Length: 527
Image 1 (cartoon, rainbow, N blue to C red):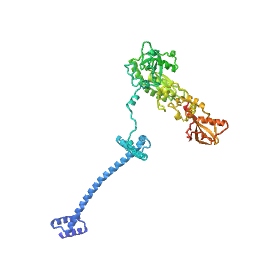
Image 2 (tube, rainbow, N blue to C red):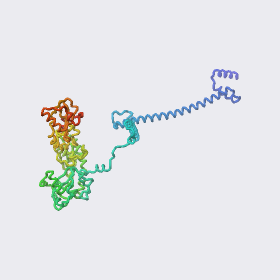
Image 3 (tube, helix red, strand yellow):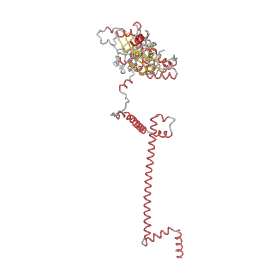
Image 4 (cartoon, rainbow, N blue to C red):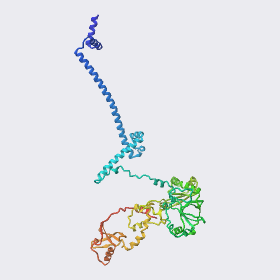
C-alpha cells in the first residue's frame, strides 16, 4: 500500500502536478540536511529578485508621485498661459467679458479670475510693453544719453487740491472763490478777476475824494456774464462785494455789487444805457435767511440743467440746454438754450414746472453767447475774449480771412463756439487800409523771360510774391517799391530781363491743402 502511494507520488512529481508538495518536501529536506550549492544559488537569486521587485515598486511609486507633480506643474503652466493670453486680451479689450467673441476657454477663465490675477496680468503686460518701448527707444537714443530713468516715469498729472477746490466751488460762476458766509453781508470771497466780463476799479487809488461815489446807480453781478444796473436806496452805504437783494419779477433776486460811483457812469456810456432807463431798485443788504436760500438754490442748478436736458431729449426737441440760473428766492429759474431752428418747448415748460415747482423762463442764445457764458481757453492760450471783455458781437465772414491772406481751413479759423473767430475782425481795418497801397492781384508783371503772376502779399514787410506763368512752382518775393517800378516800366512799354533781378528771396512754392468745400465754410460763417 505504501509502495503504491510512493509510485503515484513520483508520477505526479514527474508530471508537475504537485508543486506545492515538492516545495514542502524541499523545505523539510532543507531543515534536515545541509543545503547543496545549487540550492544556495537558487535561494540567493530568489532573494535578489525580491529586492529588485521592491526597488522597482519604490521607483514606480516615486515615479507616480513625480508624475503627479509634473501633471500639476503642467496644469499650473497651462493655467498661467491661459492667464497670460486672457489677460492680454482683457487689456486690449476690457469689454471682452461681455462680447460675442468670447471663447469657452475665456469664459471659464473670467469666471474664476480674481482681482489679484487681473493685477498680475496687467503688470505683466506693462512690463512687456515697457520692454518693447525700451527697444524702440534704444534704437533711436543718441550716443551718451541714458533713457533708463524715463521708461518708468509716470507723466500723468494728478488731481491737485486747488483743482478739486475749484471744481467743487459752485459759486465760481459768480466770481466767488468759496461759498459765502451767511452771517456776513459783505462777501470777502469776491474777486473780480474770477468773473466773466470782469471790471477793475482803476479809480479806487486816485486821490479825487469821495465825489465819484455819489452816483445813484450800481452794477450788480449774477451768474456768469449776467449783469444789470439798479437804483441805489438813499441813506445806505454799499461797497463792492456786498451781497444785496434786488428787484425781480416776481419776488427778489440775490446778487453781488460789482461796480459803484463814477465807474458805473462810464460803464453805462460804454454800453449805451441811459440813466433814465434804469428803473429796477436795489432793496437792501441780504439777510442771513436770504443768503442761506441763495446757497440752496445755487446748489440745485447743475442737477436741474441735467434733468432738463434729459427731458428735452425724451421729447425729441432739437435744442441744447446750456445753463440754468435760479433766482435768489428760488421761485424762478432761467433756462438758457441754443437751437438752430425754432423749437416748440411748451410741453417741456409744463413738465419742468411740475417737476421743480418753479416759474420757468426760456431764453435762446447763440453759440457765441454760449461760449461767452461758459468760458474757455482759446487757441492763442488766453481766456476767450467774449467771456473776458467782448460784449458786442460783430458778424464775421470768410471774406475777412481772404483779405488777410489766411488759409481757408475751418479747423484753424473756427473758435470754441464753432464759428469764425471774432479776433479776425480786430485787424480787418488795418488790412483794408494797407491794401490800398498794394497793386491789384490782377496786375501782371511783364518781363522778357515771361509774365509774372501775383501769389500773395505781406503788408507788414511790404513784400509781394510773384511767379512765372509757365513755372508756378518757384515764387519770388519782391519789395513793394520794386513792384511799382516794374509796373511803371511796363506802362512805358519797357520790359525788364527777368524777375530774379528784383527779387529779395527766391523759394519753392509751398502748396497748402485747401480742399475745403463751400458748405464747410458756410457752416462756420455768420449767416
